[in-house]
Structures are given as C-alpha cells and as structure tokens.
Length: 325
Image 1 (cartoon, rainbow, N blue to C red):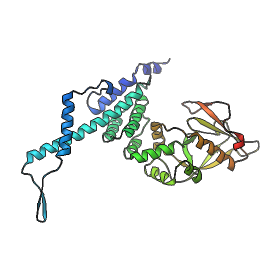
Image 2 (image 1 turned 90 degrees about the horizontal axis):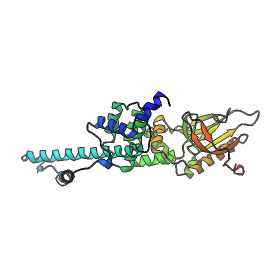
Image 3 (image 1 turned 135 degrees about the vertical axis):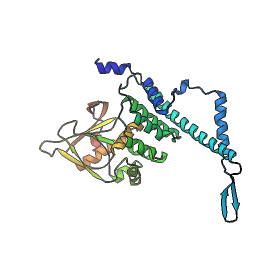
Image 4 (image 1 turned 90 degrees about the vertical axis):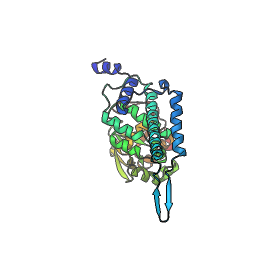
C-alpha cells in the first residue's frame, strides 16, 4: 500500500462528511441516528409553523378606490413576520439535514474516500441549492451527489448543481427513464435516435426536448462514428452488457449511427441517480444496428466489471441469439 492509499485509509467517510457539512452550514452537523431534539424545542417549532399557517394574513383596509395595509398594530405584524421567517429557516434547515442524512447513510457503506478536501465554495453552493428541496426523492438524488463529492472531490460541477436545482420532480423522472436507455462508447453517452425504437420504451421526442431545455441532452440528431479496429473500441455498452461489433475481412472499420447525446451535466447527473439499465432495449439496439450493417458480426456479453480506465471485463458467452439478428 502506497503513501496515498495509507492516507486515504485513515480518512473516515462519515467524519469527512461531518466536517464538510459543519463547515458549510456554520453549526455542528450530527447524523440522524444520533440527532435528538428536545420535546420542548419540537413543540416550539410546531407552534411557529401553526402561527404562520393560522395568522399569515396581514390586515388589509379597503377604502373606496384605495387598498392600504393597516399598521395600527405594527408589533403584531412584526411578530407574524418574524414567525414566518423563522418557519422558513427551520424548513430550510430540515431540508439540508435530510440531504446530509441521505449522504451519511451512503457513506456508512463506504470504506475509504479521497483525502482531498471538498471545496468550501462547492459546499456553500450545494447547500444554497438544497435548502428549498423538500421532495424526498429529490433529496435522495442530492444526497447521492453530496456523497459522491465527498468520495471524490470535483466529481460534480457548479453547472450540474444549477441544472438539478431548477429541475422539477417530473423532469427528474423523465431523465431517469431516458437514462435507463443510455449507451456508452469511447467516453460518449447517448441513446439511438430511432423514433419507433424509443417510442416502444415510452420515450418520446417531447422528453428529449424537455431534457434539452434542462441542459442534460441535445435534441439535435448527431452522427456517431464507432471505430471497429479493436474489440474494446468496437464495443457499445451500458452498466450490465457490452455489445461487440466485429468487422469481417476486407470491410470498412467504422460504422455510423444516429444518436441523441447527453451533455456533460447529464452524464454527471446519471452518476447520481444510478438508473437501472434496460437490457431488452439494448439488445434491440444491437439488432437495429445489425440490420443496417449486416456485414458485421455482433455479439453481446454480460459485464463483470468496468475499470476506472473504462476497460471492461466481460463474460465470453454470447447472450444475443444469432437467429434474432
């Protein structure tokens, strides 16, 4: 074990999270399972919430053509305003801690993380983004992003944080659906832009346009050239299967397919949501390619492991029946 590995082994993932979160929110962060709130404090918080819900109207005076605010009881108005602000800050704090709790639960299952500290600027930007996120599913996505950045700083850009911050729950669900069809080759992420094939799996051009507006995909159809000069370079894969395209003697070494591509922010966000790869769609894509390039041999194999350099270890057994292509 080298010096770098030794230092990394000494860094506790949970402790690194606690330090980073505490530094960003200006108070000591305690994980959910050890965080306890006194009954009196809990009652106080709920009382504030009730006060805001029940007394949120400011006295209005209607006088002929004029509408004015009645400031005769300024102290009462100030009290309600103070209660409203307190409720908003309490809600923001709850959202922040919910996201941090999701990250903590993930990091508890992690043995080592990078010793490189997370940028304080990144942490401030992150928590400014999540303080108004109350949807539990979105909080889980944000928690995964925080855990990923703790494990390996500079994984998620400011641009990706901003795009996710502006996404609705429905847009996130559509992105998860489209991402389940994502394929890769030579560092590129894409879906094949065949309308009939996409529609069969409930992905429509409206989804592509929507995700383009979110900055996660491009609705412009692109031509992707795949080099078939070696086994690895001639491979298309998702997280579970690799399809190998083998050239026959004296044939061209490249094939071209039309795709919709994911942006860099889209690729980063995919790492956060971890979509379940749709195997059946991928096998149909390989058949789709073979129909256009019948002179090439195509096989599909179960992936055992994808290494950090994107080299893929796979099983030799072909799981794509040749009679289907």
